[in-house]
Image (cartoon, rainbow over all chains, first blue to last red; front, side, top):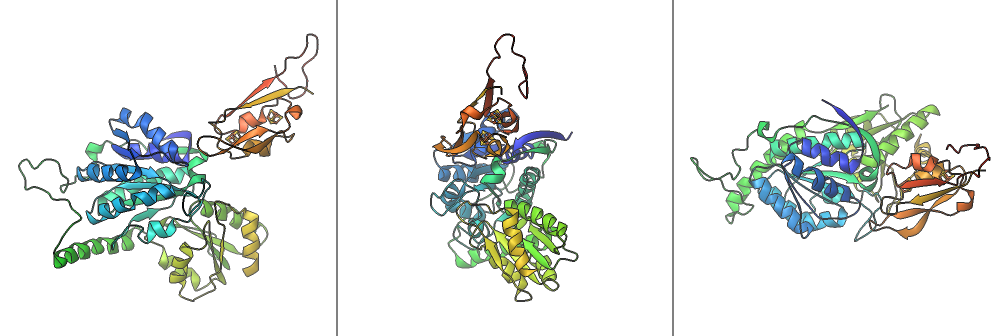
Length: 350
Length: 84
Ligand code: SF4
Ligand code: SF4
C-alpha cells in the first residue's frame, strides 16, 4: 500500500506521524515548520486525532505531557527559539518517563536568529537543553524520504523505551519538496499496549505519573532505572550510514542537510580520484562512537562538517580520542556551504 | 521574441531561488521583500526580457509562479518557445 507523493519534508514528517498512529498534536506557528501545523490542522482530525494550536510553545509541550500520560501518541513541533521554550516541558516528560515526539525544524541562531537552515541546536538536542540528568533519542533525517521513515521510528522508539524522541531537522529539509514513499497507516488500536498509562483505574491499581520524588534515595532509584534503559538504547539503537568508507583516507562526518551535501562531495571527490568517504550519523543520541572509532584507526583525517561552529565535532573527538587528525569545517548563521567549498577542505587533508 | 509576464504568489514563495537559476534570460531575482513567513520573495528584475517560456513556473516546487503571454496580433505566426 506504499504511496508516492511529492511533498515538503515538513509535510512528509507530519503525514508519516499520522500514519504512525499519532492522535494528539499540539503546536504553535513559527517558520520554517508552519507546514507541519497546517498539515496537522487539515489532516489529523480526519484520522480521528486531536489538533490544537496552543497559546504558546510552553502550553503545547505540556498538552503533550497530558496526552502522552493518557497513553496517546503525542507530538509537538517548532523551530529553534520555540524548542528552547519547550525545554522545561521536555525535562518533565523525561522525568515522568513519558513517550512523546518533538520535531525541531532548526534555524539560524542564537536568539531569534533567522529562518535559514542551521545545526546550532545539536548541543540542546543531545546534551540536555532542559534541566536534570536525562537523554532524548535524537534522530537526524537528511532527505524527505528519511524524514518520513524516522518520524515513524521516533514514535516506536519513544514508546518502547518511554523516552521522548526529538527529530532534529532544519529549514532546508522542512521546505524542500521531494517524492516520498509513505508507509501504510497504522491503527493505534494495534500498537503495543501501555499498561502504565492513565486510562481510568477501573478494575486495577491506580497508575501514578510524576517527575517528582522528594526522597533522594527514591529519586536516585528512578534515575538509575532510567539510565539502565538509556544504556540499552545505546547498545541497540545506534544508526548511521557509511558511503565509500572501505578505502577512504579522508572521512567526512556530517548529519542531516550537511550529510546530504557531503554525499555529493564524496561523489565528486571520487570522480577526481580523491579517496574520500562519509559517515553520516542518523541517531545523534545514541551517537555512533564505535564505528567512528573503528574508522579512525585507518584514515588520515576525520573532517567534521556542520552548519555550526562545531557541536557534533565534540562527539567526534570523543570517539576518535586522538587516533587521527580531527579537523573541522563549518558555516554559521544559516549560510550553507556548497559541495565545492567542502571538497576544497577535503583536499587539504587528502 | 514573444513577450511574457510572471506573477509571483508572494505567500507561496519560499525564496529557494530555483526559478532564478532556471530562467534563461535573468529575469528573476530574490528581492528584499519578505512575505509573512519571512522568506525573501522572488521578483522580476528584468521583466522586459521575459519571453513567457514558463520554465520558472514549471520549476517552482511550490507552484508560486503564473506566466502570462502576450497574444500575438492577428496574422502573426506564433514562434519560438511560446505555445498557444
Ligand atoms: S517565463 Fe521564462 S523568461 Fe519569463 S521569467 Fe519565467 S523562465 Fe524567465
Ligand atoms: S522556485 Fe518558487 S518558491 Fe522558489 S524562489 Fe522561485 S517562486 Fe519562490
